[in-house]
Length: 209
Image (cartoon, rainbow, N blue to C red):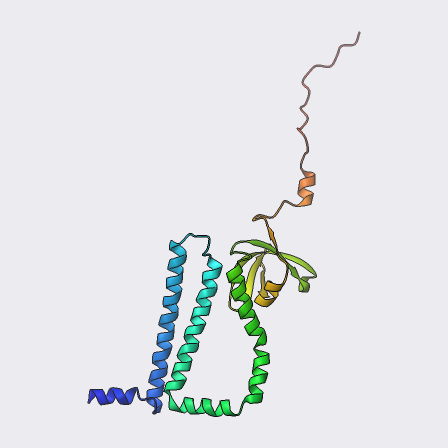
């Protein structure tokens, strides 16, 4: 009796079975995502090699989590007959819509591919101080690299602002790697004394003849 109840409970042909399977897939996705993050954090903690850095492992973590959820959603859609038939019907009549969606997702895919290239070629690492072109501010901006997500690169400016740049834009522009600490201001440098300070004389004045 319990076996029949379990079969009925996890039967994807019924609404309750589809909901139970959906909850199970969501829990599996959460557990696998946390497991991937913990494994990559452990690798970063115990490995001090120059080939592995925080930027690469952070991007790899985001990418693995995305792949996990895509695979789980695809498997769930294939297990539930109603979703499978709905997907087949939609794919049969969305030839024009698929082209529109493809054009709309072109920038997203380009940012993803550019992020992968930035992680592979490593033009910078987390904590590097860069100078980049920022057309919105009318000039260049200096910032410290904080993170690379699947779509954007985040830099922290000297005044505390976050500079968010699309990965495709970041991969195509010229970057200048600056020293870790900003140089002193020109006014402060010019105001500094250039020689030893004068020593006050303690000799008595000469006598008049």
